[in-house]
Length: 353
Picture (cartoon, rainbow, N blue to C red):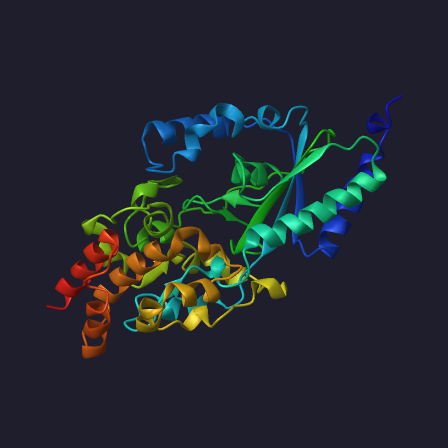
């Protein structure tokens, strides 16, 4: 008989949880690959065009919601979560709409999470591979068409909140997710219940009102989309609302009551680099591309490119308190070779005229 069918699964589950903890994961869960409900929600969301220019969300057909189409013979998914918050809610809250400093989403202050989680998930998969004959797998960290939040929810890692992020009642939502698709049929973990209740805090605090209804996000309005995913001109109606957020947005997490239970990360890779959590707007705007590349080395911030970075900081400069240094800095890029930068710099100057 094939050894894969004679595994002591309860013992294997215990070992995977133990190995996961040793590798720095706060929780491991297991789920089947039935995502019919999530597939319906995704289709409706795409039909409403809420994904904007994120064409990759519809590019792969049903592979995103049917794991066995993405990786044939997949029977179960091992989901893992890892805390990443290196600061705390209060320090993040104090930076929101600051008139001199930039706000950068907390998940990008340290090393690129893709690399950190992928390496550790590969180590976890390797440990399983040593003990299980004919173990087939593939590791994913936000790198392929995977519905990671529905899978993690099925695996008991938390529930999808009204802001569409995953929340764990004991750890809040400041964590990354990663998956191992496998050909082993593993028993499902107990799924989590929704504990949002009557709270609407995330909806109330969203600067651009991107959460148009509980559990429904119009990404086209979301500051994370506008500052990261959108490559061209940021619509004028959102520029003042962006405030000083130059890469991503955390408001819905900062004000979520469940994040009072969030724990700081113990992973040194996620510690803040280059003082990005206290970055002065003028300094960020005046960086040369060479300096920007040095300051963002190994960071997920690199995905937007230098031109987009200046575009974002220009908007924040337009929202900053008017003073001579702000205007001088903006004027230094007024005649940039980039049409995108010129447009946003001129808009920013207009705010100070």
